[in-house]
Length: 484
Image (tube, rainbow, N blue to C red; front, side, top):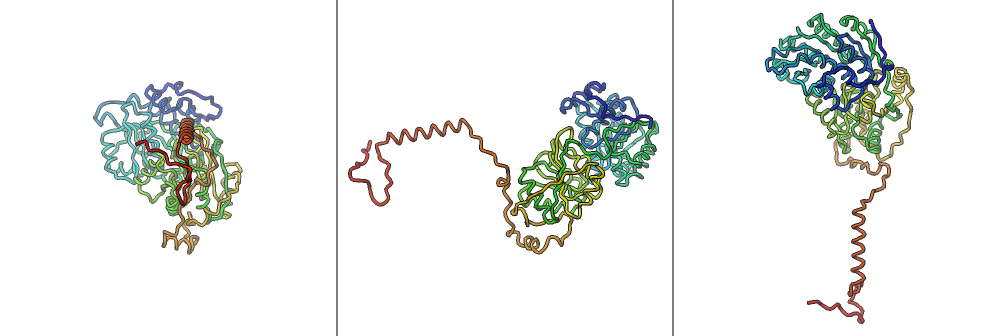
């Protein structure tokens, strides 16, 4: 590597200082951004200059914009309003490890390029390939793809990569973890040798450096955060619980704190489905996302969560990277991950773009070692807390997120057979902190006015107000004269 930069020492810069295209600056301003993050301040000028870049930054630091903005800037001279596909060859390729991340990057690119005629296409597996073929045939300057589906299009000759002048590998470490190295090597061989190459990763492991040496040329190395660091604005806490009480703990946390827009992580697909089912039965708007869901189901669940229609998303690590939800306040780890690095990516879903966030972990005695491994990796002692779960939350289904049916017991089988025996959902009103009611001055004045009128009418009335129980009125009281 020829150059190494540490962006932590870089002072804050405005996006207008980079010389970006006016249309991009307009889109950045519309998105509410004014000052570049450290990774953006280092990467944008280097990419605009045409240098190869190898960048590492912790999640939530604006890494996607760090390469999409200068990439779009370099594509602007090729923008054309022509309808001819020949005027829109593929000139840039972004590879992402998962469908969710590819879709997330595509959303960012389309938002920044909204006011220019550049065409963008996203291709990934799990959906019908026909619509993607049609989009590629129309021509597009920028393609975001997962490696497997891109190779499908290459084999079916629905995409031509001969004019690609920029290649981006996003979340390269995740690609290697998922076994995409052979696919990456096949794709790189099909690209022109004279090109700009960009690699972004959460870490710079030995495998990542070996990959970088194979297709990057004298890259600038940018590292804006310590390896495996967690964001300082994310508050972490771990609560010891018994395995059978994890569901009760989740329910208590959601109800007592009125948590909304929360991602709950579990380790297994069946655990995600079971926990979601139990939360829905408790009146919580929850959806699950995992590998057994079709791509359309996963997209629908994510869109529902982002829009606020769904308040809780139960996920396996398929959603740990690339998912960007504005203002996500909290992440709950019901199961601690077996790979400590996955913990960093999980809690990175909150506390993004400088906002504060909270990461809650529930662990059993058997998971104590996993928590210690996480602490060694992040070099931080996660504070321990005590969770006093009211009895009303306990013994409500005991859905085991690990998928162990033996833990469910006869009581759970009885409730499945006789669903009417299940207690009604717990009203979170009784477990919220007390908040005194705020009186409306206008309504209060109306109420006092009505009381005053009633008292005046009562005092002026000639008819005495008597409680007549068994017979008439006293003889010395005459009935009121009729006005008829």
